[in-house]
Image (cartoon, rainbow, N blue to C red; front, top):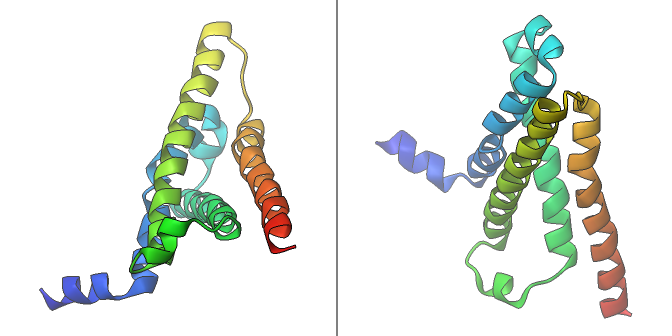
Length: 142
């Protein structure tokens, strides 16, 4: 019982749990869109790749939330964890929607979307949000 209590008291472990929430969707996207890589690669490498993609996207969205200061976020007990949870939920649904459309296009039109283009389509809006957040932050601090 004390291990569970210690787990939820440690912010670092809770911060690792949020990107891990996205890992099954990344694993599924590798299976559906990049089966050759999935088939030839060891499971450990696949899990590490899924975690890196999850953590990178979560951090990118958290940078956007950090640039845009929400008034309600300052009232929260732990604004970092609130931002992390919201980022993970938004990215979970974004990844599912994108995977649905990518696999539908591949299935219906027999046009294969390469996994690398899937990554570009996934990360491009996040990079655009960071740029927009930087511009808004710059104008607010000016």
